Amino acid sequence: MIGQDISQAKRILDAGDLVAIPTETVYGLAGNALNAVAVASIFETKNRPSFDPLIIHVSSLLEAENYVSDIPAPLRSLAEHFWPGPLTLLLQRKNIIPDIVTSGLDRVAVRVPDHPLTLELLAQLDFPLAAPSANPFGYISPTSPQHVDAQLGTKIAYILDGGKCKVGLESTIVGMEGDEIVIYRLGGLEISEIESLVGKVKVKSHSTSNPQAPGLLESHYAPSKPFLIGNLDELIAKYQSQGVDLAVLSFDKQFDSIPPGNQITLSPRADLKEAAACLFAAMRTLDESNAVVILAELMPESGLGKAINDRLKRAATKG
Ligand code: TXA
Ligand code: MG
Image (cartoon, rainbow, N blue to C red; front, side, top):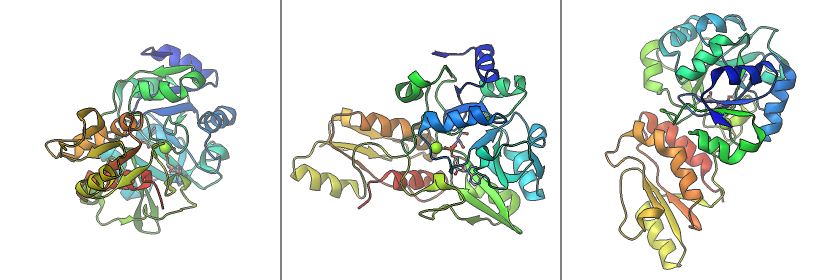
């Protein structure tokens, strides 16, 4: 069921069951993070490998302190500036966090999401919410309640309807290694915003397989149809000459040779924020079209363009 009833969401979560929650980044599949059985059912519902740890969501930095033992000064300063917002911090966990949440790792991922309904819900709960993106493992993350309903609707008691996600890309994941500040996943908070506060950071999110963060596996966020990235004029010419039905995902251009229903321009005014907010919905729409192949192009590699390109490359068909 889809609705806006926070009390109903609370009742379901209090009983150890799952609710899909809106955030500014993507919808999450949420359960009581302190209840190992509830957390296990998140993995089962998503078909997610249990070695891939979850982010816990809290209503404030103050509440986060109940679950982590130490917050290094630079990370505290990031939390103070960017929470609520698309920033996840990896922090030393307290024992109250079950192993299943962190896959046994010493650090737990924590964030305060920026959505009024979910912040209100979190404030009413006596526990944090463990929540991965509310999609089957490996598929495109959901940015609307309808996306969640289409794939997991029969498996989740309630979808809290907070409308479309305004950022549209998952949170940026940040932690420390010694004195170094490390970005483990590019996301909705730009590197430049982080660096303007805490200085130079190291970006580690490009590894093809990273056992510390298996959600960063190279193939992820992927549509079901072949998804190819390159120069759109060249790709369109090549596949049209072979008579293949095409769908096209472009940053700011339109193509006369492609039917309007088979192409999506993420931002005609070339605005990366707008492109990020539409990206996952556009990938889903084209995946559901009658095309056989989806062709896409990379964005300018600056600001949010880096995080968008990261998702496009992981979505791309390999080989
Ligand atoms: O924006 C978001 O972050 C969304 C919303 C729902 O909050 N959540 C999200 O969760 O994207 P998920 O599970 O799809 O991605 C979480 C990523 C995974 O790649 C996971 O491996 C990594 O965070 N992660 C979680 N806990 C970790 C930990 N303790 N150490 C290293 N990586 C961790
Ligand atoms: Mg995910």
